[in-house]
Amino acid sequence: MEQGELSLEQSLGDFERGVELYRICREALDSAEQKVRMLVEKSGESELTEFNEE
Image 1 (cartoon, rainbow, N blue to C red):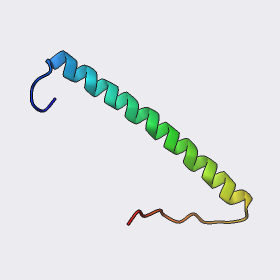
Image 2 (image 1 turned 45 degrees about the vertical axis):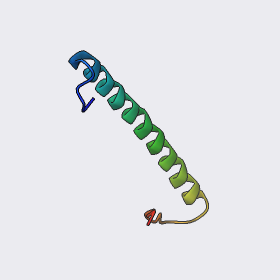
Image 3 (image 1 turned 90 degrees about the vertical axis):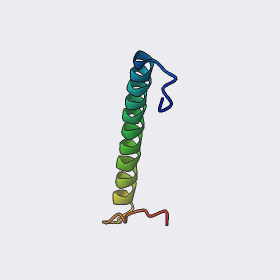
Image 4 (image 1 turned 90 degrees about the horizontal axis):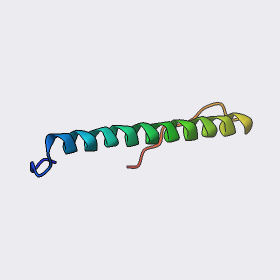
């Protein structure tokens, strides 16, 4: 895309697909986070801690 090998229409189509994939992934992550919160609450824990990969 950055090298200009695609037409404007193809680039826009790829961008739209990327936005859709982002939305799908975001929804999956939000759902997983909600499930984790429910499990933590069921186990009696009252607080979630931030996850750091570092």
